[in-house]
Amino acid sequence: MAKIPLVDLKAQYAAIKDEIDTAIARVIANTSFIGGKEVTQFEEAYARFQQTKRAVGVASGTGAIYLALKALGVGAGDEVITTPHTFIATAEPIEQLGAKTVLVDIDPLTYNLDPAKIEAAITPRTKVIMPVHLYGQIAPMDEIMAIAHKHNLLVVEDAAQAHGAELDGKRAGAWGAAACFSFFPGKNLGAYGDAGAVCTNDEALANRIAKLKDHGRASKYAHDELGYGERLDALQAAILGAKLPHLDDWNAARRRHAAYYDAALAHIPGIETPKVMAGSTPVYHLYVVRVSGDRDAILAELNKREIGAGVHYPIPVHLQPAMRDHGWQEGDFPNAERAAKTIISLPIYPEMTTDHLSQVVEELAEIVGVLAQ
Ligand SMILES: *Cc1c(COP(=O)(O)O)cnc(C)c1O
Image (cartoon, rainbow, N blue to C red):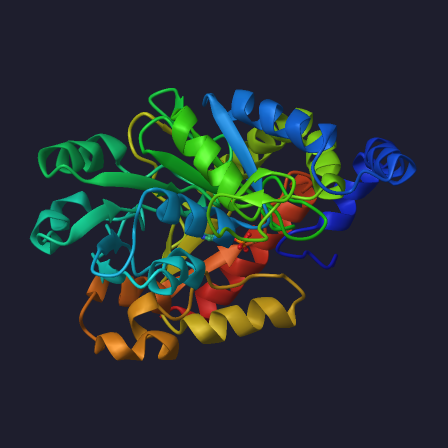
């Protein structure tokens, strides 16, 4: 039986080696490592891809969220509403800015923020709602935008897992003031190191973020305000630029693999396949099933059989030790807590073959048949 990783970056490199090697060699030959044409060309291409006016390349997805919130004026005394079922980097920038993370439970079927629970969490201090387009499915943005308009709030999209994902034909960045992307290597569009971008239709906001990421520069050594060292570098931009033309195909391949899993797993008792909202075209950054029975035992058995399954994420934000000052407790966000205890991410990446997929299905079905009583 073949070993099947959660994500296979070697297979992707092998498929486009010449394009990547050419891009890297070009940057090294030019020795223009910071800023310059590679970065602006990628920014323009990525803005076209996301169908926003601008994309500002930054050093990471976390940096993208931090800079977007900072540029929108989030600071001490403000509250930002987001989801407990996400990677910690959604909440970290809120806390680093001195603002307060306010959590709202998820919809147990889509794992995205439940819009029906948002209004109860709004206070006079609320400034931003930050939905996460988790696993590559756009959050229910019509509902979220309606609430934001009604209460005069800003919306920032954590789109770190949703490159190219669509809802009603629109891509991340179409709704919020800004959409924040991560190009962490394992994301649907991954750099060979850390990288990120903020996409926005607001030129002034894009310019402000472009300035903040580069030490608040007005010109080479004149600084209007204190900024940050949060630039996207030329080598990463060139690699991302070489990969971007493949991204729609890669996302389509992920959708085909997800459809295979959906069909093959649908009738296996003890496995719940992911729910897609009407009008939604996810990009399956992760393919996440819910299992009944002993999740940890099922996961351990998959890993023992060299199937790279994982959990995204095993500890919700409100139960993270780093967030202890908020005083949250077990039971505060039951849907997020139940998700953390019952989900498994199965291997998904564009280069997977039908043999890989059928092997995962077979082994999972066998394991669940024994362990999910
Ligand atoms: C990956 C990720 C981030 C952080 O991105 P980095 O590039 O690793 O800093 C933020 N939010 C979510 C939902 C993510 O998946």
